Amino acid sequence: MRKQIAAANWKMNCTFQQGEKLLDDILGAEIGLSAHRFAVFAVPYPYLLMTRSELEEEQNYYAAAQNCHHKKAGAFTGEVSAEMLHSMNINYCVVGHSERREFNAETNAMLADKVNLCLENHITPIFCCGEPLAIREAGTQNDYVATQLKESLFHLPGVTIKNIVIAYEPIWAIGTGKTASTEQAQEIHHYLRSVIAAQYGEAIANEIPILYGGSVKANNAKELFSCPDVDGGLVGGASLVAADFIEIIKALK
Ligand code: 13P
Image 1 (cartoon, rainbow, N blue to C red):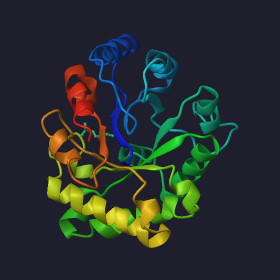
Image 2: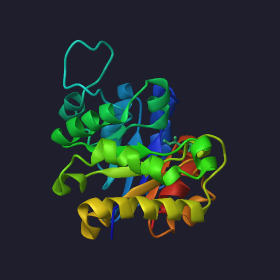
Image 3: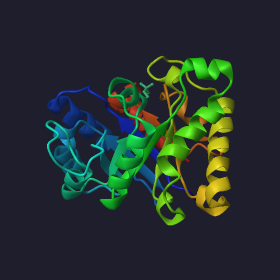
């Protein structure tokens, strides 16, 4: 079975103490995760060590960064490199979230560099793609997301792209309470997998987890995750409420 992942994206929320309590409350539910099921917590940089140590004893629970810089090292005040994350034993990093593409002008080419640096540092990139509302309304979402994959990932050899996690997050569904229907999610996830298969073959395409993000909630996670090509979720708002994220972890296939 492909990896199934419930990934929390806290974004710029929670004080340190609130974050600690949130993790304690979630771990208090004692959801044992078997071989293919994972819970990942993308927290603000200053909380990474706390999160890693909270999760240390737990099987298949991991801390993630929400971003890393696209250059290896140097005079980039305020930035954090993939190598720094690796030196702190951080195993996952969100790359190319639509908020960073929008507010930090991250381009597909820059994201290719981030993906490379993550992989060189043994960090699994959770690579985000997804279309804005105007593209969905024009019906050209497939081409739009395929271009995002091609320009940021398809320079990788097959043996390497297998180590990526993709998160499809339609921008019109993020923080809006408007979720893609299960049909819409399955359709585009299946399409993304077919684009990967055309480039790398079915076997590799079938190994790559594709998460859905955009208003995943406790009451819709099970239905979304039941789609054959939806391998879990990248969750914003609902990951900040322990009881909700517990249900979302439990909803994994
Ligand atoms: P919401 O779950 O709040 O819609 O956010 C989704 C998201 O952006 C996760 O990265």
